[in-house]
Amino acid sequence: MSTMNAPVIIAVDGPAASGKGTLARKLAAHLDYAYLDTGSLYRAVGLQVFRAGGDPENEQDALKAAEKLPDIDLSDPELKSESTGGLASKVAAIPSVRACLLDFQRNFARNPPGAKAGAILDGRDIGTVVCPDATLKLFIIADVETRAKRRVLEQYGTGASDLEFQAILDDLIQRDSRDTNRASSPLKAAKNAHLLDTTNSDIEAVFEQALALFSNRMAKA
Image (cartoon, rainbow, N blue to C red; front, side, top):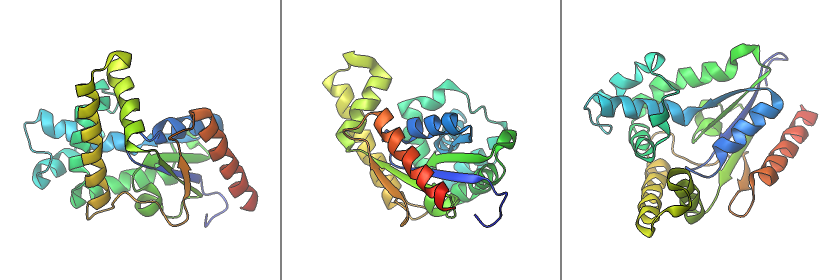
C-alpha cells in the first residue's frame, strides 16, 4: 500500500458458486476485517429492475436502479435466489452500471466500516478493476459441474431432480459466458492473483491456504 496507515485490502474473485463468498466471509471473521459481497450490489440492482417491470439488459432501466442503490435493502433474502443471480449477471454486463457502482466499492475498500484495519471484497473484477492495488489477490475456481452441485444443494437440498440440476448447470454456463466475455470488466484473474481450486477441497483446506498466503504477504510488507 502507498501509505503506512492505509487499510489492508484482500480481493477475492471467481465465478458463481466457486466458494469465493464463503472463503471471503471466513477470512473477514478471522481477521476482523470489513466484508463486502459486491455481487449483492448487482443482485440488488437486477432485482430492483425486475420489480419495477424493467428489462435488466436495458441500460436506462438498469442505470436508474443502480442510482437508487443507497436506498435498496441489501439484506433482502430474495437477493440470494438463483433467478436474481441471473438478473445480476445481465445488469453487470452494462458498463454504465459498473461505473456507477465502482465508487461505492472503492470507498468501502479504502474506508472500511467500523474503522476496521482491512477490507475483504469478493466479486469478479475486484483484483483487476475495483482494487488493482489490493494487498492480496485471490482467484477462486472450481469446475462448473461441482459448482452446479453446490448451488443445487443450496436451493433444493439433497432431493433435487435431474431437471433441476440441469437447469442450474445451464444457467451457470450461461453466466460464466456473459461474465468472461463482457466488454466491461470481464471475469479474469489478475496477473498477480493466487489461484485456488476448490473442486476437490473443503472450505477449511482452502481457508488455510488463503491464510498462509496472507501471512506470507504481510511478512513481506
